[in-house]
Amino acid sequence: MSANENYTISTYTDGFPLYELKERDTDSSFVVCPERGGILTSCRLHGQELLYLDRDTFLNPQANIRGGNPVLFPIAGQLVNGEYEWNGQVYPMKNHGVARTAAWEVVETGSSDSAFITLSLRSNAETLAAYPFEFELVFTYRLKDGVLSLEQQYRNLSAEPMPMVAGFHPYFATESKNLTYDTDATRMLDYNDKQEKPFDGYLKLEGMVESAALLNADKPEIVFPLAQGRSVRLSYSEQFRYVVLWSVEGKPFVCVEPWTALNEALNHKKELLMVAPGDTLELALNFALEA
Image (cartoon, rainbow, N blue to C red; front, side):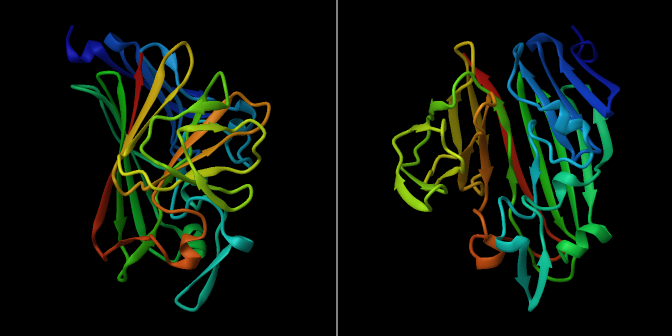
C-alpha cells in the first residue's frame, strides 16, 4: 500500500467546515474544526472513538463547546471576577482564555508519511483587548501509526516577554466517572473544598461539582481506562506540570486536562511560561490507545 493510499484528507460541512484525516492501516482518524477554536472534535484510534462531543453546543456559535479537545490559551481555568492585572492595567479574560473561541486559519495539509493539518491563530483586536500581546499560535495535528500528536508553537511577536499558560480540555467518552489513573502524582488539589489531599491513583468524580488537579507528577504522561477494556495514554511535554480531572453529573465523559499552570496564574504571577520577544515555545501532546 502506498503512503497516499494509506492517508486521506477530506472536507465536509456539519454546521461548520470540518477536516477529517484518516490512516487506513490502523483504522484511525480525527476531525478538526478550524472556525470553532481549532478544536479537535473526534479522535478515533484503532477503531475506537476517544472523545465525547455535545453536538448542540458545537453547532451553537454562541456556546462554549462541551466536548472534543478545546485549546486553552493564554490561561487555563478561571480568574476571579474574570479579570487580571498586568503592568498596572486590568484586563478582562474569559474562562480558559481567547484561543478556544477564535477562528483559526488552515496553513497546510499533508498525507505522505502521515496525515496532518496545520492551523494558525494570530492576535487581533479582540484578543488584544483581553491579552495585550502580539502572538501567533501554529498547531499541527498529525496522525501516524495510530497515534495522534498535537505539535504546538507559541510565538511571541511582541517587544516584551509574553506570559502564558498552555492547556487542553479533552472530553473522553467513558463508561464510568470513577477511575484509576496510572500516574506518579501523589497529591491533588480538590477545588470542591480548596484542600490539598493525598492521591492514590483512584478518584471518584461522580458527585463532584468542581475539578481536582494532580499536583506533583514527575512523569509527563497519564494512563486511564476508556471503554471496551482499552486505555488512553496521554503523553506531553514536561512543561505540562498538572493534570486536571473533571466531569459533569449525568454526562458520559471524564475530562483529563494537561495544564502548565493552575487557576489564577496571570493574577498571582506564578508558574507562567515566559516567551521572550521573537521566540517560539514548542510543546507537544500525544493521544494513544492501548489494549
